[in-house]
Length: 462
Image (cartoon, rainbow, N blue to C red):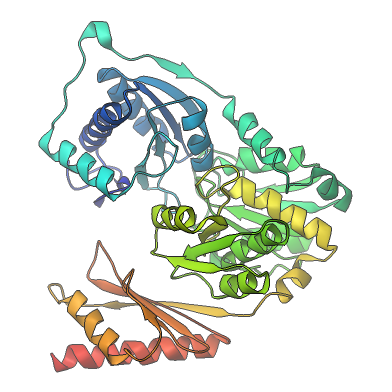
């Protein structure tokens, strides 16, 4: 059993003992702490709640909503929803904040409380730290019977979200309709099975093939939208001879595409393609995290704009985007952040922009992919002895590569001429994550192995 308390929320496996997993006691404690904090910050007593379709969702929803009522908060309950939809609903309802009940790409035994501020954005480090302190100290009161909160169900935000997407100047519904796309969708039996087909229909897509689109929370495969988990979608794309496949994770903030030949477009290239389209029509900068593909930098420069890197984590990307005035940004895991709608990863926005780009290009999706810089990524990790000074180890590697362009804003990223390596320590286990990228799979793996061997040598010497 696992319970992870972080500044952006609380997540864990369902069942077990309090404090060791995501149990009802933990859910109540952290919900009450966040509700108390957000009321004090905003002066509002309204909270938006939505959830993905995982099996534990209804149970967790009942606990969260009941707890918010018990501290005097009024709840707008969106029911089955998506992370970006809740993010839109918070300012739409002029609420104090929001709670999204989803463990994102984690398997079905997991669930989580993701916490949003009054702007509908993930809370920052300072707010998260304060919420954790309130929870640990039980520093909150419950309301008497005359001051309990009320619950209002609101199922209108599916359409409101779609309407906001359709209203974007860079989304061309007519171009998409005229392209006559046939599309297959894998939503891993979560809420994307409702939201994605509804969006596609609104965009004028008439032929939609669905696989794993029943929102019953019974994930048929690992819910992370990676190639090894999307074999059913690839087979459907090839078997039905459709133009492309779309896959989203359980809370619909990550997006990837399957090409007409059944091969992956590459989740790293979701943001690259969407950014390319946006930059063609909008002057401005781009941002991604340090572990994302160099292709975004290349495309950004080719469009006469500036690229900036942020620490890993959506809140860090958003902060950097605001700082540099980015018109598009996100993460290489298929997360597209388009500020014209809101500052959050949004697969629905990504789908609409991508399909417009594809329709106007007149190309097949594989032809579009071939036109972008070709990079290949390798993802590894080093398991270390508990208690080892990981910060000291990263400092030693920084010293070793002091004459090579590098960044220390999030671990250590070393930028070689044609490859890069990003070393990050985990916050939950004694490992170093080693991400690398190069012009071929072999070179990406080779530079990773070189760095891992050097780390092993330093550890051995100590």
